[in-house]
Length: 107
Length: 180
Image 1 (cartoon, one colour):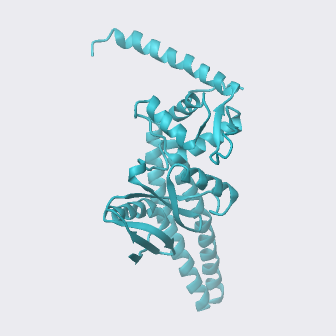
Image 2 (cartoon, helix red, strand yellow; image 1 turned 120 degrees about the vertical axis):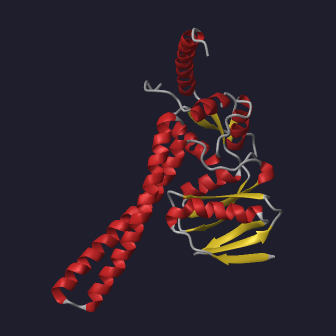
């Protein structure tokens, strides 16, 4: 179910990356911030919207958290991983082209 | 100690309202409840809280809204009150930055929701106003004229609000063409 069209948003890309382990909302915000060395700070409303859409697309699913855990946790699905791999290829193309062209230009 | 302030903001001034609430928080007055043009504050450390407000898609007691608010609460956000579909939040600064939106797409989404709140009211008032104006021209009853002027005034006001929101939307839209 990998969507053919276009680029993932930065938020979606990092949320998917962070969900290779089960995390709840706040955990995702913290992990994304640390993965990006503090650069990407997801706001709670934006994160919630992204999670809802990705659940609908089947890119992530709700994970049953540890017993007694009230907070809802999420984890990436096989479809989500496929989307992530597709995005990685796209990003590699962007980087390769950028380096090749800018690399020859004096800045 | 509690402090109640009565203050009026038009719907399209939600940015200004939020800014004002944060100025109060910076002075040590943290929002603790809201009502119609009414804000209640409690004493706090200056700058202890950040305030945000949001127009939800559903009323706050709707299951979808409850789920959303619970999600926010898990990130350290407190719901201090609500008025109709508007919800007021605050979060301790010590728990980190507090924003509801971190990309242009979600800001635009929220803005459109606010515009869709005003649009039906604008159309309704414009229609009632024109209808009464038409009646007045037929029957010359003063009451028709009063109704017409009242509705048309509201419609013009809402129209101005919509124009201001539309300008903001266009700015965001242009920005969104370049940046997330």
